[in-house]
Each structure stands twice: as structure tokens, then as C-alpha cells.
Image 1 (cartoon, one colour):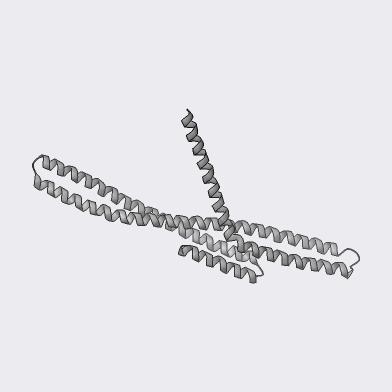
Image 2: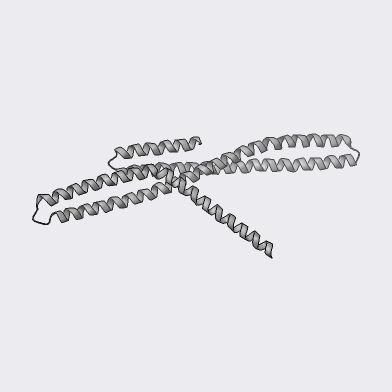
Length: 225
């Protein structure tokens, strides 16, 4: 697990703790989404910087390889012309370019690994944002549904001449509904992180299996022709 992943896990855990104590969980979710959007923007900026740096390193490698090949050809021409001294000079430069290729290829490999890592982190952030946002919309809809039900219960409770017993049960029903909503919301939020990772893994696995089956079928069809 990367340092980035551990930090995100801590952030989600902190969110869950605050949600358990908050009277306004939707507001906390909005704060979490705002923070995640900022993380995404920073990751996208870093991704662009890594891409530019990798392209620059690749250019250095390509130029050095071109010069290495050129100096070797020059060394061969010098030998054919009987100019052994010039051949040695060309070969010396060829060795210099070979060393440069090795150095820049190492830097390029490191840069590409960093680029891959930031791309993975960016993908995780975007998936996390979309999952939390979808949950947020769902909870808002549930809260609104509960609010309307409460208003309806209050309206219904006003009928019957204002007897205390119906009103008492209406208030009890509202309170129990609040408890049930809070319990389900907190449970869903705790499971949220693992659920979207599992779903993403299953989705990728299904797509891969379908693609593999398609290629096998294509191979069988080409063999029959």
C-alpha cells in the first residue's frame, strides 16, 4: 500500500468519526468532496509535469542514440579510408554517447514509474470522488424523503380533535425513523470505501474475461477459414 493510499484511508476514517458525532453529515461530506477536488487538481498538475519531464528525457535518449550510430558509421568510414586515428576519435565519442544513453534511460525509467504512480493515484481519487458524491446525493434524497414524511405525519396527527395518543405515536415514529436513518447512513459510509474498490475490481475482471473470450473466438474463426 502506497503512502498516498494510507493517507486517503486516514482521511476517510477521520470523516467517519466526524460523521458519527455530527448533526449535519451532508455538510461534512461536502467538505470531504471539496478537499478531494483540490487533491485531484494537484494530482492532474503533477501528472502534466511528469509527462513533460518524461518526454524531455526521451528526447535526450533518442538524440544520444542517433549520435552513437552516427559516430560508429564515421569510425567505419575512417577505417576504410585508412584513417585509424580518426576512427578512434569517433569511437571515443560513441562511448560518451553510450554512457549518456545509459544515464538518461535510468532517469527515464524512474520518471515513467512516477508517472504511472500518479496516474493510478489520480484514478483512485476520481473514483473515490464519484462514489462519495453518489452517496451524498442518495443521502440528501433520503433526508428529504424523511422530512416530507415527517410533515405528512404532523399533518395527519393534527386530525382527530387533537388527541394526545396519536400525536405521541407520531413523534415516536419520527424519532425511530431518525435513528434508523442515522444507523443506516453510518453503516453505508463505513462500507463505502471497500464496496467501490470491490465493485471496480469485479468490473475490470468481467471486462477482461469478455475480451479474452472474444479473442479466443476470433482465433478459432481465423483457424477455420
